[in-house]
Image (cartoon, rainbow, N blue to C red; front, side, top):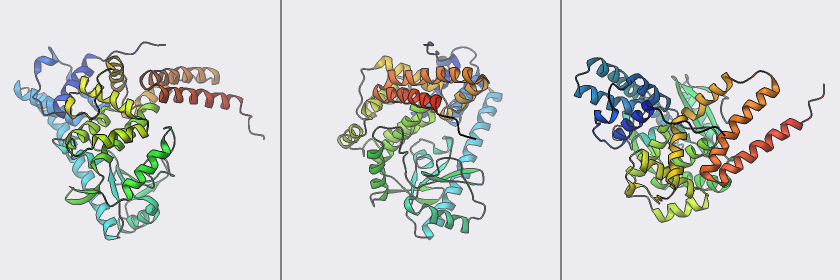
Length: 381
């Protein structure tokens, strides 16, 4: 099995600056050594969609040394990130008003909802807008199109889970259900819990883009954000922004989360060990205060270090890794299958090292699926 790739100097420097941004610490230029490769640092930050946060720290260092070109480059990134957030928030406000005027109960999931947990929300790089719309998804989609004509619906994504749309360059997902029913062994239990929580009246509100938006409870955000990135990490990969969202969610709600109830739910969903491993990694490598990490367990340090290497190597839901895989994929069928098998064997083998049963289920499922395809009869002509 191929050795794990080490974190590069630029990636390590990027993680240090990200840590300073997360916890509002003043960056120390000496921690970066002589003549940092700023371009490589920002490329690494871009791969993990944290370039706004990292650019803020680069600007601080540039100000300390009167480095005008570096300061201007950092300001350009900051202005673009802030502009993108205002754009997404304005669309979010328009959508929320139309749904509310129609009498529909919707809940904002992840994204701009958890951005408010950051010290400066406008520096978190925005993504999609996700609403839980439940069984009224199609009616809500119709109302939105009647009142916002430039919204465009398309069929990409999991149509059974959510209805996908685009509005002024921003992806929108109207969720029939909040979770994916596959992958996790406890998918049914997680699905039932999320549906119950999102349909209840026990929600909160937040002002985003000048509009009052319904957002979930603290414990829901903590578990849902974790479940979302954990599921994606098992199958393909995630960027560090997903981890940052989780850490800021936990930190901002540290006085509201009932740890007894949290532990009960994580055990029921078979996610406690994974939660504790990600938590240990965050404390060791991303500066998360240990006292703010619920259910902290400091025993699996080697596994936590391996997890950090896997996270830094991955990015952007694993899209970059998949593109590299396909770029060098042989055209001939047998060579193609062998190349693919080596890639996914390594991926799921590492997941099994980190997460035991869950990783082994993925590895075994991959082989079973491959064998079925191999012996599947070709369609008759």
